[in-house]
Amino acid sequence: MTRKLKAFIEELAHTEVPPDVCNQYSYIRPENAVRRENLFIYLKQMYELKPDIMLVGEAPGYRGCRLTGVPFTSEYLLLNSMEGLDLFGQDKGYRLASRHDRLIKEATATIIWQTLAKSSKTALSWNAFPFHPHKKGNEDSNRPPTKKELLIGEKPLMQMIEMYQVKKVIAVGNKAEESLKKLGIAYEKVRHPAQGGKNEFVNGMKLHLHL
Image (cartoon, rainbow, N blue to C red; front, side, top):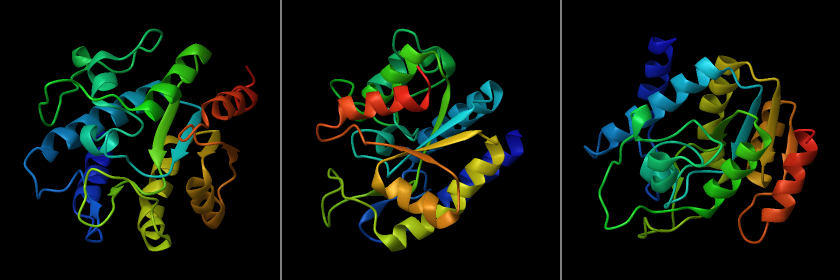
């Protein structure tokens, strides 16, 4: 499986993306080597944990997976994990790709993993588009992926579903739903926690996880 996961990450690294998209795994920037390694650690952990559930989001954000390489994480979460969640942390081998005065937090990542930690459920996380779409000329911004970009994301999304053989796929937001529906994947849907959607997301997760 190690070989398969490394080949998957290499394929991501060599994927060509539009000009206003950052491929955080590419060989263009030397620090992306840390992001590739972080993703490998995460995917390997998940393969060993054999999660029944997969959460599919929209795309990496500039404060989250764009920095860490791991879906639905922030720098702070990656290095410190959180109570009730024995998944992340420096002791697992996770590292920062770049240094700042303080570790960056990301609200969506915190909400998602807090909800999972309270449920004692393990879930594999991925995005319909695995690269970071940003506004033209501003990498420190987010925008929804286009239809063309979602097409680029279809192959890795299918590969993830096939590799992990999860029993339940949950779309987090409309873009994830769009891709899953187009691919003919059975799914359930929850509200994305961003922009005031926290309570709806938590309630939706409770319903789908039968808590």
